[in-house]
Length: 436
Image (cartoon, rainbow, N blue to C red):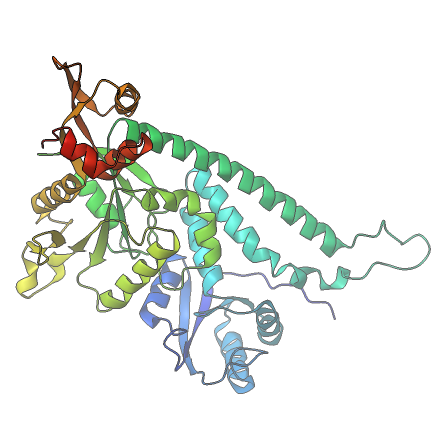
């Protein structure tokens, strides 16, 4: 009996497992929202207790029998599990229930495939899908795992399964090469922005926290925004002038979700690098969400994974228009040092946006040096580097052969340039009349 995958559809049964392990547990409401975002017609929602996962079905054989009966009674076309399934578990469940089965990862990949609009986004989704498919390829070709025997039937030695695996590897390698080119192009654009001394501010946060709505409110843009998970997939960058500071680049990026598949993080690394190279992160939080603390932890975990865990961060509690207590008013919160750390606002009605712009100017200005440097005559190479960075706003020649430069550049970049020429920043600044 050969195994062939059943054709899927949109009439779906959702299966959620109640586990005792908090690291493996998922949110049932979020699961429903994911299925709805994918376009599924939810026929019923089944919740099973799962103390000891079964290696065959993940759920027990009795629960599998109950699931098969539901599929037959409701004429379901698809079963979606809110948990990761192994290839063998998917195969066993499909064979037992006579219905196509996908897990949480497959569901998220399907949503990403629907949302991708740009060429880069489609490449990233295809890479993630092929990486996921490569572990499940055996299921569709079990009848071709053996070479045919007999006179006139022997092939060149490569089975259909091996041939498909080879084609998959070649396609994955090709996509990675094209995405590497995209990463180089993005890095070139970032270098141009750094030379122009334009900082980048990146919106990050849990999916459906309101990042795109905030992006549109700040930039008067037309980025697609909707009350659904992963409404934004392709990154968007816009120039924004902040009063009292100057121009910045604001980046709207893909939202995060708990247990974000590692393959997606790898495939979208070129996109996520916009966040890992930002000068400031705006962590957008759904202030009306009942699980915002857990969502904030998930975002922090993903930021650490992409190398952005130590970047300056300003928390933006969005959707205060949905609150009915004292938090429904715009508010800027500071830490013990007087630094802005959290702001409450509503991107929907514009409350608190002016406070956000002031907080961004304040946080960005903390890390940018604006002042004068008096360089001795033998520091010509250092002077040339400041000009190469496009950091010089004005220049004057001193009577003693020194050069006075008015410079604007990040504090860390200033210290790096000084050290590159053998100067210790604290010694240089003390000896050569640095004045802000």
